[in-house]
Image (cartoon, rainbow, N blue to C red; front, side, top):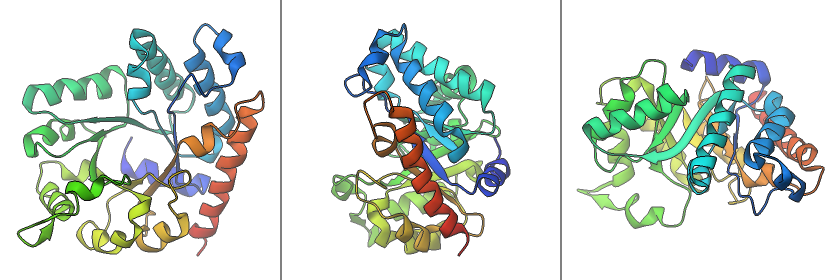
Length: 271
């Protein structure tokens, strides 16, 4: 999917919502555990109930790896279902990979070619030769971890190196990578005070913003300091939507939570 196609979907749906599909079988409604593939059954039901309210889905790969080969099969069925039934939806493999040379190329092939995701999250710590193999894939996007929403982000990301915060060095250096036009960035909603400076470095890039909802991030503040003329934001909510209920009404409850966020986004888009 191209960036322009994503922007068109945002305008059409009046939404820049990304829904995280982080499936924990301890939290899904008990009746789904009787299904042959409860993970896919849960995902399919959530997708069917919410696809008109969002522009992206983001499975966190750890929640599938934890269930071994069955988890991978559930993930493959989920992405195939999305690509076949909702090809306009932007898909994110939240895998946080990051290795060098041929290893990165193989990770890219796994998620971009075999799984056919539109994008993948990448840790930048190993530098250019760990990122550029992902950027080599046409119309695929690499989402670099820049300033994350967790408390431990302060361990390294905001530390100054030669007078400059490390996350700023990541942003500036990544712009020099080959095919950097395919880069997006993860910036946590709980770091809203940093958005203004981040936009000075990457004024037009899309930001994947976790932390709205369960982690306490504020949508209005993120939009105030992070939105661009092409929106430039994908606001992710996972637990707050998919686990809105663990009863038989879980799909309706998820749709209602997604609708609440989407309606707030309409207000922001109309400003």
